[in-house]
Length: 111
Length: 116
Picture 1 (cartoon, each protein chain N blue to C red):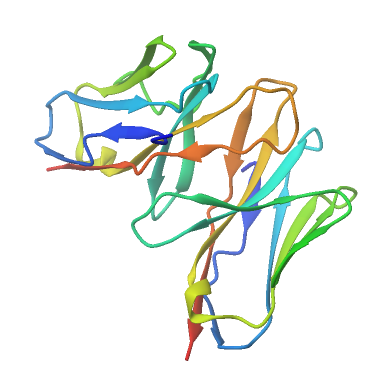
Picture 2: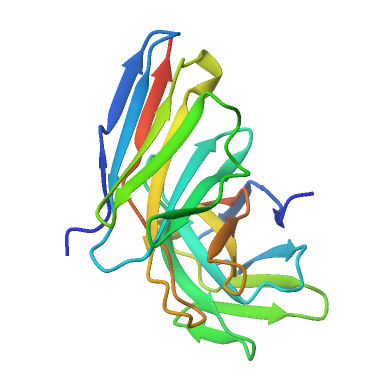
């Protein structure tokens, strides 16, 4: 069983739309959570950390539900530049420092 | 800081040849990770080191793969002999082992390996 599961998409949305991605993780001992962004033929880069109380960064909102073991990312007012693959990440700190990545959700914002 | 540095950026080799991928982590980062990314399987954790010591190599696909970290500023991932199914992008990442939550991992630009 994969540590992190994501809907691969693709999501094709018009500019200005709101889009949401969900992700589930299997290990309740997971301690840190992130969303990374990966552009075509580039390395993954941190988009934002996900805090227990939920957090917002401009048009991006991340939520964590520990009871259900899922993480979400909401993008409001989508821009063409948001087109990328979004990777859900969980980190196990107590057992070492593993970072496990979901397979990613592909987003294309259409003019 | 120069970030995580990987070399080579691209490698094309013939089946059966030995391939060595190199990584220099960010200075001061205690954890180093090797990932493989393919369309079919996404980003897979192959092995990671804490303070130069391999902690978990359960993701290494088979004995043809080996990784070393002789010091805090250098790691190698070796494939011997290489096979066409090893074709993928190999990423190295590093992270501080701070004990604090929400400490991110930083990635190198990757090595695109093609085995023909």
